[in-house]
Length: 233
Figure 1 (tube, rainbow, N blue to C red):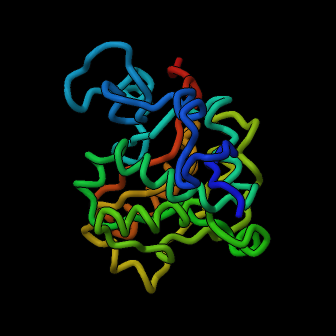
Figure 2: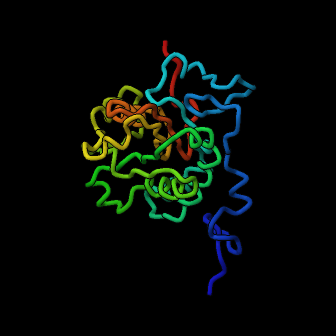
């Protein structure tokens, strides 16, 4: 029998986590962070304070939290889940998000993953956001609604697009299932995605949920991209 290995491949370490070296290289996000995008500040803030970008160009979702920064140290783990069929990473990310998004989780009623289009789901075989949301809901006693939000058309990758390009790419791409709409009416929704870049996808999802009657939508992600949005001119 082979010895256990960590998720980053180091032998002799529990397969449920990272080796000490890999863990130390992840930039986990701690308070103070912007309430709107979850990215870090260098100085203490009042509760609920937001960065200049979120103040001048607020998101549709109410609040956001990211477990870590998206960089060369976290990228491989996240892409391993998203494109490399490393589903064992999902439980680890659920634990990270449970810690980083605790204030949002305590306020929410239901958790909903950002969906894949059925054709992309068929090719990939699983939705990485759903794989994280399911154990997170179980751990925190949340109502898990995987089929409420639908992606109604295939969208091209968001990578390399401007903020405007990202918004146009996902415009009208999400809707709430009429059969499931009653389950979000008057509820505080925690939307779960993998990476927060400009927030274009999460904003479109939040708009669909709010239009269906959700009371508010917060966002939790594995990682946030620092400097992805610019201050409006």
